[in-house]
Image (tube, rainbow, N blue to C red; front, side, top):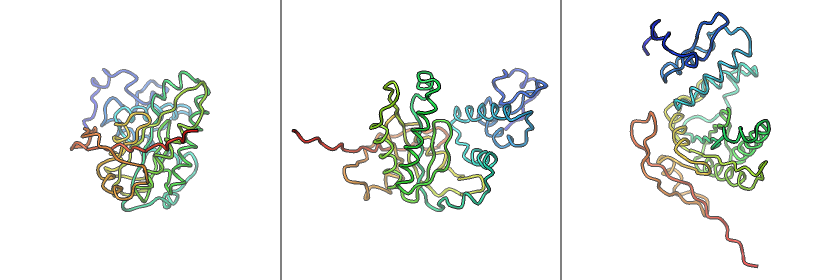
Length: 270
């Protein structure tokens, strides 16, 4: 990453920085992907005047990370440990070796926030509760939850598919305030990431985020790796339909994605 010169820095607007200190100095540039990644790694070295300023900078940085398709799992894990006093041993319960990731994201969350205003926080809490219980019931583990995104890990790929289906079905059954529709997109992908003190690190983490982004609300997409792993063990009435090749940002080769389809039970005529 090239270091910003004084003239280059001067041309950038204030919004291109995560933090403006009390003296007006602009810190942590976030105007491109390389600088966002650098800001994530340097965030804890910055001295903020108070917790409110730190939180504002953190939100701006996470928003920029999402804009560039960066999944800052390690950053979020370190933030959680700082906020809750957690230590690295808390990560020991997460599975290692070959694992499968599930990532979900609420479609149109900004529009829901504008429509519901302060009631959106209650809706988000309810959505997270449904997702968390579905993940736990299928034997999964929560890795991270921030804003409208949720990140979980499973030892078995079939369990990740079952959790995603349970999430979708339970959200459909729920009555939401003002009759709004809550639609969650989901992506599933597996690999052999490294579990570090800061969380999972590896291409699989970034790939599952891209798979999730390729879905629309209510759709569950899985990678070709996951499809191969679950083809012989799908629950009854559940099928995988090819949606063709997708160019996933930051991934060298196109990925064939498959949609998880579930037959709905037929109602008997009365």
